[in-house]
Image 1 (tube, helix red, strand yellow):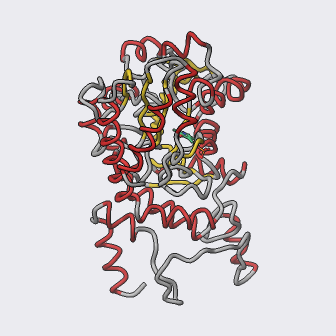
Image 2: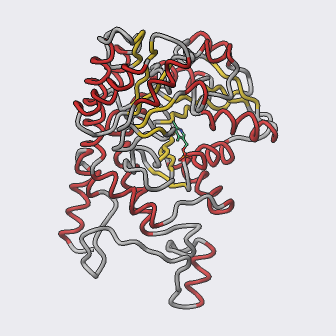
Image 3: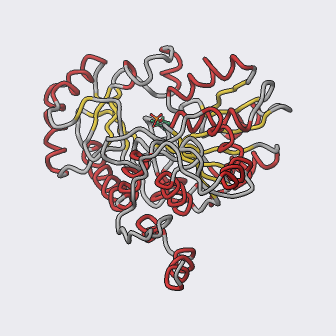
Length: 401
Ligand SMILES: *Cc1c(COP(=O)(O)O)cnc(C)c1O
């Protein structure tokens, strides 16, 4: 490393997130490349038999095989760790692989997890359908009810898991209170930070132990690749890396490169998603055909104060109830033309979906009512199109109710 490069690395160690998002993790190779290189290679060559032996035994650091390490993936890991303010990160093949790898490496049969009820549907399924099969116990609780969390703690509770703001009604968890509860009971506190990203919320600063990301969403930001990661202290990440090396759900170098390009514009996009969503939520709240709007940036939302404390923006996801029944909600959705009718989110393109019959259709009617996912509820993940065009599209929906 040249003196200048060493100085650059020291400067980066103290840099702000916007700088880290663009520069952390990459030092140009002897080729002098400006953009991060993509290392499309499954394995690496050694200089000698002795070096091969040393790499395999772990006596010498260095690449062996891309299931273990890959230089492009490493740049992504170092960059997202720096942005979240964590010691280390490990990249995974998807957001679900990040959650699976965390549980498989840090938990064992007989352990108990407390998880907020309204997490991503597949997360619930991962716990109930698969991890429980191997002897893990899970209790689901109300995200915002601290008494509920406390009551759910058992002697064998090892991990607390939450997602905030929640999908689709933007409930906000008290991260400091949950981290205090986790510490008191010797539990690992895991936060799925997919909806906010480090651009809007850094759960480690509020005492979380590990951050989960579905990079598929806002980190990519343009709907191209599936991936994920876990961020946190070295002693946790090392254990998760051990699981990934053996079990294999690692990130491809090409996807890591796409996510790196996404991270460069993450802050700008998240700010734009937040302001577009706020404008649309405020406008919808004024429309007579709308019963209620759920967005944690609105004064009418019970999570506003907490969100203002924990987040530097309110994010791109909101939902609303139309006056009417399921048929009215479906007519609204079908009358929109600009919005993409898809369950995905975290894209520059605005997406619209009917949670009760899609993302949350596995819940019973009673569970949906408890979670406020009524038949007249519509979720919109607001993209970066012109706000007036988005309002006009919502107007098409309103006209069809
Ligand atoms: C999409 C999503 C996941 C799963 O991520 P994949 O990349 O699709 O596996 C996990 N948590 C949240 C909050 C999500 O939105």
